Image (cartoon, rainbow, N blue to C red; front, side):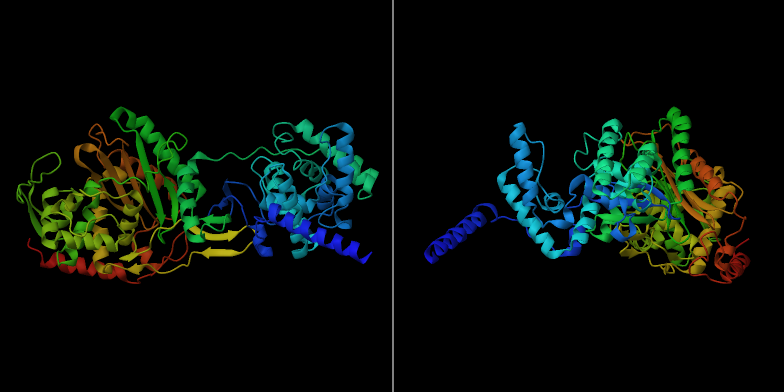
Length: 626
């Protein structure tokens, strides 16, 4: 007898070794318990606007992590009724259920029942492919055993509810509740819970959005099984049948946000890292301003631009702290998702001149200094003014307001092209060469709209740079904080007094210069820009509240019909700024130094800054030749 047992033991050990060699050699490793919630998840991001309202969902909809303690009792019970009524009475593998399923399948001659436990189903979805092979079934059982060694039954059920697929790109009970019923899982009714419990068996065939009748029919079976098991009463079953669930209309992705969300997605992944897919990201976007920006760019380009050979446009708007309030990368996201606000590199033309003048001021030039607008020559290059003609002696301030090319080139030569490039880099530009040619004075190098807006904002912020940003906060769906933008005063990159001088000169561009069409009743400063052969047209400007950069042109770089920055771009800028400032009390730039504004105190306030600036101007004017 002992010999027989010994032989049986040896055979069992040998069989076990054979099973391990054939079926379990490549068994996937099991991570730590908390990592089970995140493993093998496709990226999913829920975007919120600046006030916390949902803008859109990108990728699979996971919703928030649902905990059993927070769910109504009928929610988990509905899933147990549908998938594994004996869940709390058997181990990770239910031999009785396997035998029952095998008998039923043998009698019918086809597969009509399955014997997998809920833990096995979870193991399959987390670790394995859906292949129906003996090896996969053995691995499924082995992984289920591992899971129940790591987790309690409640923890297995909770993990299952958070990872199961419900169709319609929805994963997890909370993601499904929000997708189909527009509510969190904690608010599910009995009839809604039964409908969701019916879906994992065949999420495509039973999809409520495509076959509601089939989904409801299976949900009735779920309710009947709950009653038969004693988990609900007959009265509760009848009440659920009398109040069938009603689907909410699936929220459509608003194309007005498409370009901004593409950029935000890139930034969120960069900040959170690629291993954190279930993200809730609060953005800096103002939904009203975003829609206004998209509408204005689209209407002006399509209504007025088409006749002038203009087919595309872009706009970026910043708050005084660098927060991106609106970002539009084209006229139609659905037909062309290429983001012209951040991806397109275009020549800024004269819109780059403020940085040339700013570099000149650092070398001691004053706004009241005089330069002669006359033919100039630098080697073989003879820069000319737009429209031809020369004005003779003009002040530096007038030269900027009238966008006189010859004076800009003279100032660039005095400051040095490398000094201009160095200043531009301090202001946030990244694409300029270290040693540009003198043509940098006329914006011959390529930049993007986001860089232009950020660069001009240095003047608005009295010489401080607040890098543009679109992501305010990032959390996982379970509430773990991954990133919070830290408020900080702008980094000083330019002298405050000289920044004020630039503001004063750029105001004259709008009050009496090439940007007069941008005027809308608020103190504003800005600059027009037109690249060679009218391939690009810009208007970039700011008020005490906002900075905005506008570009129009064509993707294939074909010329427009003599469109300049003072025309369509100034028109777009004006319309957007009118909407952005609606309801705000008019204030001049000296209010920025005092610290008031719609976004709270302006960072790095410089009390008395503009009063000092006024004294500087008065002193310079008194010393200037009459």
